[in-house]
Each structure stands twice: as structure tokens, then as C-alpha cells.
Amino acid sequence: MVLDITDKDFENKTAEGVVLVDFWAPWCGPCRMQSPVVDELAQELDGQVEFFKMNVDEQTEVARSFGIMSIPTLIVKKDGQVVEKLVGFHDKNRLSEILKQYM
Image 1 (tube, one colour):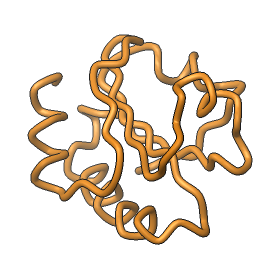
Image 2 (cartoon, one colour):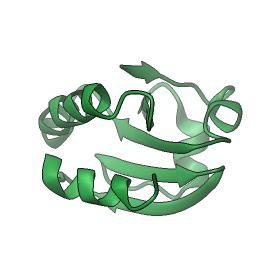
Image 3 (cartoon, rainbow, N blue to C red):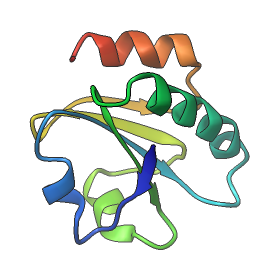
Image 4 (cartoon, rainbow, N blue to C red):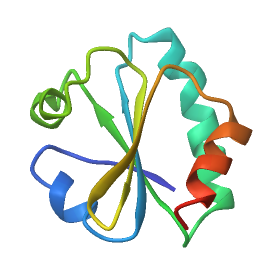
């Protein structure tokens, strides 16, 4: 399951394990393409990777702190440290490969 995350709970919820955060906005076409891919991976990797979405129009602090200028941007964290920052659409196979190297 992909959960919404806020500026306030970002650090706490992404501090442990392997986490993917999808930075998106409702008006973003490529974000609408990325979303089903993230949803599908969340089902397949349930219990191995935590998945979150962050609406950059509503939650601006974290996006600003990561210097996110284009969306979708996907950030992968492992034990609280950013290990990957992916800008633009990424297909399921590519994302799966990236996540599996940190699991």
C-alpha cells in the first residue's frame, strides 16, 4: 500500500528500512503515469519496502529541502539515508532493480 506522507512525519516514517517516496502533484501528467507503477510495486514488495506519496503542492518543505524542481521525483532511502534520487518517469522493471539492490 502507498500511503500519503506529510512534511511533519517525513523524517519519522522514512528513518528505517528501505523506503520509496514519490513526489507528485495532481496536475502532473507523468506523475499520473508513475503512480500505477508505484502502486503495483508496493503490492509486490509489501513488507520489504515502504512506499509513500508526497503531494508537492500541499507539502512544500521536504520537497524544497531535497531541491526537487521536476516531478515526478522518486527518492529511495535506506535506514534514513538517501541512496537514490530519480527524476521523471521510471518503468516497473527499472524501479524494481533499484529497490532490490537495497533490500
